[in-house]
Length: 115
Picture 1 (cartoon, rainbow, N blue to C red):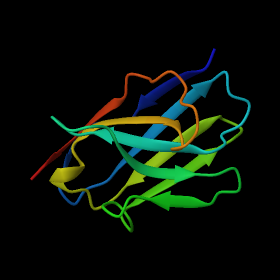
Picture 2: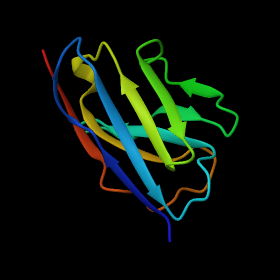
Picture 3: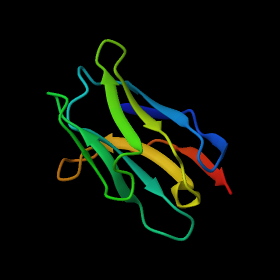
Picture 4: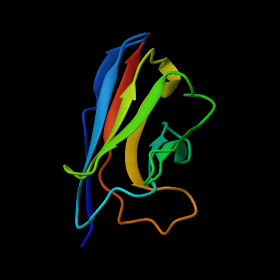
């Protein structure tokens, strides 16, 4: 059974950085995985995605500030968040990329950006 465990969230000042991790189990290789986030009172939205060949895609709101990466040996997905803004506050989740059948969702990791 696939399990996704997000970590690395916390409180960060606007303009600061944070690196999130998504540890997976039950997955042979990180293929077509993505990060999503849920802001308070809002629906879950796409943040960034990465393919088997390391092609990446980003939401316009994070382009140039966030970097998605993966380590297949560790079966771990990462999200480097730089120059964070208050609107980046939310619970961050990892899962399959949009258009792919999702795995069971993890608990997510809370990111709070203070201004």
